[in-house]
Image (cartoon, rainbow, N blue to C red; front, side, top):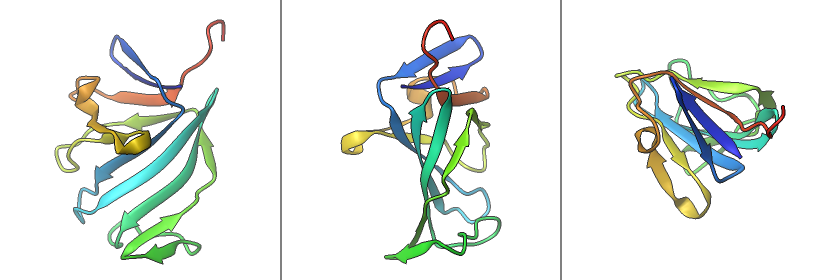
Length: 123
């Protein structure tokens, strides 16, 4: 499962994979990243961006499909810090079957939120 934590709140999402998206602060273009939970890590398994620009150039192995660049970063991280900004708009989390919700559906977005793989009890 994937967990969201902020201040004194922990939310366990009943899924092992999500798509995290947000708007780039300068280019105003949507960025998306796909994560899968394999405790204690989150694996960044895919990313995409519509177009390119300041600070968002796709890597050399990215593939262009219908104006959107796609690539597979193959990166594992312990957590992703979601530090909201008035310039990027709100983060969105999407699940299977295209169900999407803004981050504020679960937590106050006026605070720093941590996205991580939920650790089994006892770890």
